[in-house]
Image (cartoon, rainbow, N blue to C red):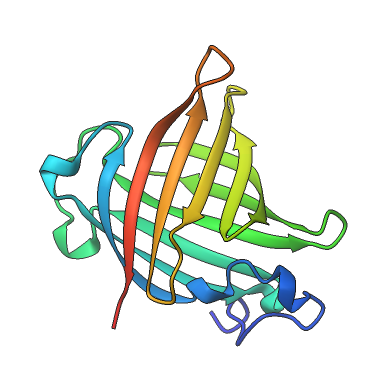
Length: 169
């Protein structure tokens, strides 16, 4: 693991483009929507972030349900044990984002940029459906993550994921 992990951001990434460094550490997740409204289930998850690849990338693992609650089988859309690799690309002055969830056989490619106070990642599902994943309501110890997909009408963004995160102590 020493070859993967880094102590911090690489010096060739401008501080003003450090979109993800504040995420480093562990987070508890309250999942409100994951492909459907799951708020009544009280579904909890966890996410863990670290600098990797000489500080030129931030990698995470998102786990739903959290490890302490795992066991048995889960309905499709609830089971997630996936990773995201966010790699700084100086050529486009943005972050290339790859998300993989082997538990569901899913993979997405996006590009992340700051828009105002938010971090907006845009890309598409493998079938070509445009997606928008956002970190909003960001504080030092909390954030909201939402995932949306563009409806077939080409104008309406449909909520697919809504996670509320609190930094682990």
